[in-house]
Length: 169
Image (cartoon, rainbow, N blue to C red; front, side):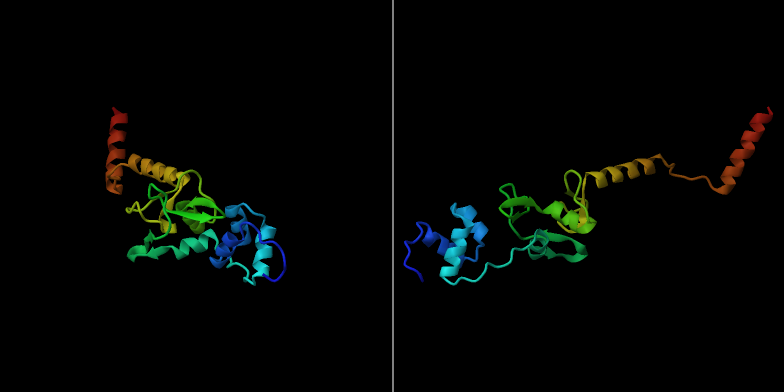
């Protein structure tokens, strides 16, 4: 310590957090001290500024492994029920909405689920929100309305001739 002041009661914990590379905001939130206190102790002990905070997208890229076929597996943090999450500014964020937004340039509507054959896949291009799934269901319903056999031109002529004969009767 460079001055003759009485040490802060939580200074040992603050120094430990500083040595872990925590930001002043993280220290303040975790140890229930002011950010000014953390900043003052950082400066007094000549700790460098904290590492820059990674964005959720950077954390996503860091914690995924690309597999053959374009699928991705999550290697990062998980909840107790094994759902992949990212901690950002003290909050747990689900990985799938982040991946969806990365691919589509907009936040998802409703829940995001893997749209490929692999339920564990977190690849951005394999994610679908509620709107995407509804559009896919609508498309499948329309395709189901199309007859399996579309009449050929000859079949259509034969049908026209048959209807003309019926009308003549």
